[in-house]
Amino acid sequence: MLTRRTMLAGTAATLGLAAMPAQAAPIPLAQLSQYLNSLTTAQAGFTQINNDGTISTGTLYINRPGRMRFDYNPPEQMLVMAGGGQVAVFDAKSNSRRPEQYPLSETPLSIILEQNVNLGRAGMVQGHRQDGNKTIVTAQDPQRPQYGSLEMVFTGDPVQLRQWVVIDGQGNRTTTALGDLQRVGGLPASYFSIPTEINSRGG
Image (cartoon, rainbow, N blue to C red; front, side, top):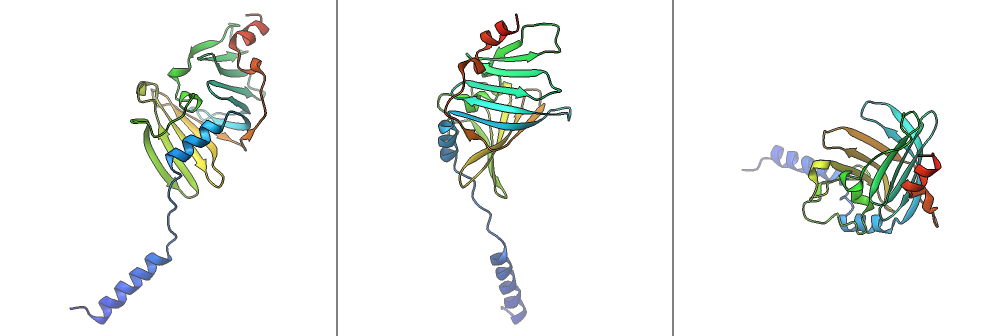
């Protein structure tokens, strides 16, 4: 039998639940894919937190599909380029004038540089959740899971990519926080040409 005390307790619990703010649903994967596919040429300032805790800053340039460039601010003497299916790391402190190179497909950043980003693809997304006003998506290339995963942070209204974390195959984490990602009309082809950069350095 329901007593007055039980009824009051139930009413209080119901009111308490009603007073709690509703957790917003995460932005749908199809909408995030559409946003990334619309991001053809863009640039933003970035702050990078490396796995060892060191911090770097610079400017990021994106020219989808397949092209990306990280220009680091002093005292860093690095330049990272993605173009022609390759990633090249130029380090002025290195004894070699030629960059370290590896296929773009071997880095999780290839996920957002694809010709057609489809986060709804089978096996790609391992996590899709809302945290306050942020939608967080963890994805990996289902054909190359050994190369790690990419954790992307988006905000909505309008949708914008705010941060990503590259988690490599060894579990090392590199966080890149973005300023406002500004769409631009065009970027020089030389920004993403690894051979041009090598030649300019006398390599």
